[in-house]
Image (cartoon, rainbow, N blue to C red):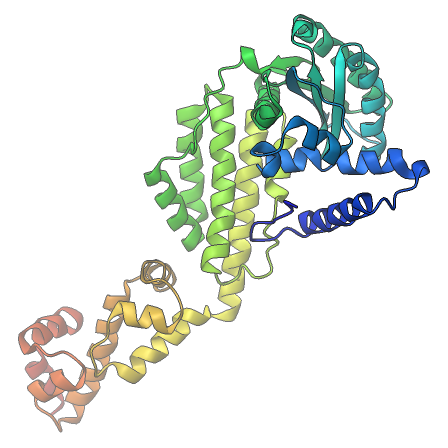
Length: 429
């Protein structure tokens, strides 16, 4: 079996995987009654796209016969294409509707058109609509464009019963083997993104789009900059960064969409990796990505990302203020107890279980000065107290507050207090 999950584990994916395992065991034991065969077929096929998109064993080692057996399919050698029917809700929608009912209606209507040319088709219901994985003979490829138009018309009829719903069709690249269906699926989903600038109720062919795939659409410098912004929960800097991104990529909606997707994922990853204070009550899932998927203009797309991430960062900051940000409190207590000894930023960061870079950034943000400056200020305050008592020389005072170089101590003291240590001591003695 190939039902492995990657951390962090999504509850919905875990439940799906468990259901799938139970069904597969039942099939192997021949415990399925004939009356339930069609229902079981639909259920098993519902996992096909999930397995494809997760790049599991299906995409690497399974042959066509294995796949047919595993998913109750009747695929044959030939072409495969993924066709995505995207359901969109515009601002005029004023009715409550059941997404599953609409998806089933779309499947019913569209399959009547698809069945004219296919060997077999697996239909998958996804958050945004329906995805058809169509297998057909190579000579039927000439009919694909007409088929896509028919599917659009079928889908529009299915959603016409509900006001405020629109349908868009994205057609993925043709591929010669089931192992390449994942790429066809990605290109179909990406083709639909172009409705953001060209409108809904249309067909978008991936062959007609300039889809340039990359492993990452964000540069390394941009990633480092965004991580720092997220660590500091700096909303103003994030807004400025978004403006720069939109300005640079406004002519290519697909690249812009991909970059914003990466920004969202980077935000979630930063929260998970650093366990940022104030993030414990934030549901770190796919909510922002779902909202992005339902935007219909570039302005709405950018607004969804900006408002959601800035809103979450504000929540984190508010919780930090209410709690007094525990790591900073602990760092200060450490300094107060150990100021007479050598203090290294790396050691203090370790004491509060943060990375040195993140600790340094957060401390500066919270206190308005660097950690080193705060330590120096605290040491000077302790030195002033010792000098006022007059029981110790300047040299002794210097050592007692953890500064080994007397010349540096005198220079630092004057910069903070305005007079040299000796002069300060004389004022009180």
